[in-house]
Length: 325
Image (cartoon, rainbow, N blue to C red):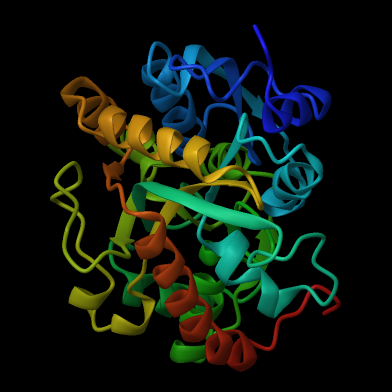
């Protein structure tokens, strides 16, 4: 088979196979910057399963957990990879729209180094309390009152410093004039484990990471951050319903590729992702971990990233947090 110049360069750059072939790559990769077992990790793996046998990849892509630095390590790695479209990263909105306000020296430029492919799922964050908080506390305002009366115990965890859940807790403290000590974790599940074990009072994180424990009665979900209640947690009121509308946020997780990846390859990846997101069994599987499926065009994702960047700038300034603080 005769190779054209683009194909030759792709092979020399480390492409898994030739993007020009109808079947696409033999096997692609998906980077995810948080630990296995979290709701976002489940999304990456379930979507990867359905990308196998698509025009994008013959085999299901390998999901690699590049854990650390609040998801930044995965995007820093993506930035350095060959721009052939064979590796995608699934990441929450915060890493591209919020982190630029937080880190003076971010290891990647979300606009220059990465290119949006498609959103995949939307997560509503939740606030939960565990056995460290009396069972009589069943609302956010009730937690605030307890925290004011017990300042030495008033703590909350989040999956990472600088993450959206971190800032929701900070905004709650500012808005209600209560000091809440923040405890950052490396991902959701270590924090949820400590919450259930009584080591911390409260936790803010994607709602899906609470659901099994909430249903088992091991923690109490006090609120979710969406504009309306979640269908898989209809008993839990939103922050807005409790008079805390400034805590309303719906965070998408989206797929990015290395900037300058070939547009035909990105178009193929986009089409394969959209087809996967229409799979009824995928929608049901992800609802089980608290995620709502939501695809997009690259243009829609780019616009949303910009809007979220502009929204969170003043909020981060109000909170006063930087990576150096």
